[in-house]
Structure formats: C-alpha cells, structure tokens
Length: 253
Image (cartoon, rainbow, N blue to C red; front, top):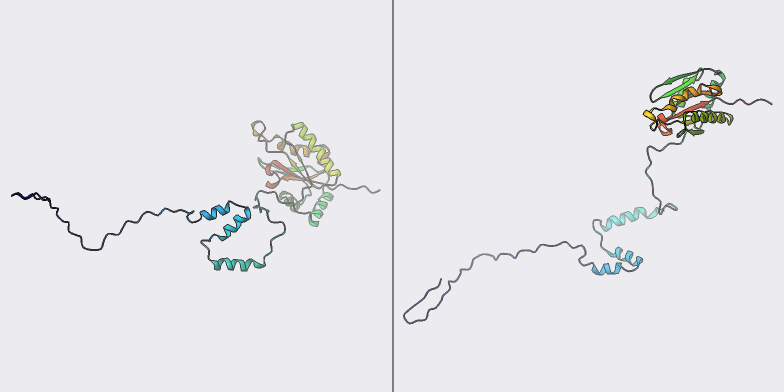
C-alpha cells in the first residue's frame, strides 16, 4: 500500500511488509530421474570396442544383477565335475517331429512262421476284398487273422516300394506287375505301393487306388499275392498299400 503525505514533506512510498509464514519451509521439488543404463559405463564401452578378448574381460568385470554370489558359487560347485560331451560345442538338439516316419520293426520268427503257414495253406485262391472310400484290404483264404492284423498295423517290415505318381493307368499297371514279380523273384515278402489319393486327378477320384485290387487279382500277380492292406499314416496312409507276397519256393537240384 502507498501512502502520500503533504504539508511540505516529500512523498514517501512505503511498502507494506509481508508477514513471514510460520512453520517449516517447503521442500524443493525433486527433479525427475531419467533412467540411463550407460551412466558411469562410458569408459567400459570404450574398452569393449577393442579386441574380442578384451571385450570378454570387460564384461566379466561388470557387476551382475539378479544373482547373488552365493548362487553362482553353488552352481559352479555342482558343475565342477561335469565334463562336456565330445564335439558338442556347436551341436543343435532338434525336437523330435511327431510326424516323422518311425523305423519299421525288425522281422521276427513268429511272423515268419505265420506267413509260411499261409503259404502252405493258400493256393491260387481268389482274394477276398474289402473296399471303402479310404480303406482297402484283401487276403486269400488261409491267411490267419493275426497275420492280417500285423500287416494292417505296419508291423511287417517293408522291404521295397514303388511310387506310381505321374503315371497313366496303363503305365501304372505295367509298373505294378513288373515290381511285384521282381520282388517275388528276389524273395521279398512285404512291399509298399504308393498310389496316391487322386487329389490331382479329374474330380479328385483316386483312379489308381480303385484299379489296384483288380490288378492284384489278374494274371501271374494273383498267384504270388497273399494279402494287402491300406498303409499306416507314416507310410502314406490312404495313399499307399502294403502287399504281402508268398514265399518263393526254391527248386531242389
């Protein structure tokens, strides 16, 4: 407030004094702290830019967070007597693929006996065939149920196979006949015919799959085939066929 006085005295401006507030003074506002991971480490970064071995040494000197020295010491004590596998420095362990084809079971004496008995019983009998959209099977009279189950489950080792993809109907028939006759002459017992699902054919009809039972009942092929069945998924599933052949009888000299 300003007060002016007259009567010959000069005007003096007086300021009203502010009363001091009692109590403790207001604390200064804290400045926001900005996180800087490189603070105090610039010298170390300069050292890291040197040789590779120098970088490792500098990194070892950096303080570790999240783990106590006692934990590190305990881990080193446990691993002190562990030796690394030879040649495993850069080896990558792959996770097994569930769709990977498993190795076929080795042939056993029981299966050999069953197939031999079927050879003795079966002559040039007609194949009894069961056919559905996805599954086909057939066997001549005399093939035991147990042997047929082993064939359908893929328990009999596959010794050779033929792939019919890309062949015409006539070409596929010739290839199947030649393949089965050659396999029989070589003494093979179980082979695989990959006929496909017909996905690339007209109207997606599996023509070769439908014709295979007919080919197996025709000509010299019918005399050497004991049974056949749709393969397991790892061998082609509905697009392939197991064929069990008779044992070739050796002539006595």
